[in-house]
Image (cartoon, rainbow, N blue to C red; front, top):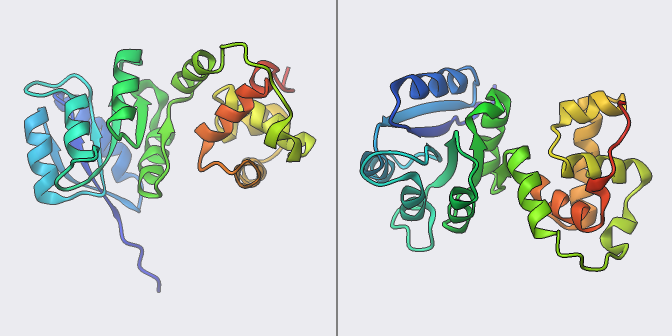
Length: 226
């Protein structure tokens, strides 16, 4: 029998009901366990340094010090005890997204994104990837790639037609399940294609795929499922 070490998670949110909801979501997964809860920023930093969780789920707006500063203290270059931080918030404002990612956040997830994306964000953080809610990703990428710079085939030229389709869907912020439904294939097939796309493009995660896809104009054309 092979034992799998559970991923330890610290919850930091000033609302009891939110922490309870997050705990229930994580408890439903056999590989995730909540090791502590904090209702303010200072407590979050203290507990993270004491408990050393694999991942801290941190709200932006908290008493004491906010989630952006918590992220800097736990995940920034000068962190005394580095901890992976995923920011979980109701607000997708640029004034939160950019600083959070700049200070080392391993994810930025909106509370309305649903349980599946939250769980995926925790696992991605442990794997060294960065997961950002699809709606936030699309807005950021449109801003970053909206300069009107000339486009070339670049690494996208190595993709098959189906891979180009899927890369475009990723760029539009769709999940594997949503892509599978639109292209009439299984979610497992989509996952295999996404892994192949990452390898061919030389990127580490879905955000990397989306960046290249938007630069090449693939995010501007919708796929089947009409």
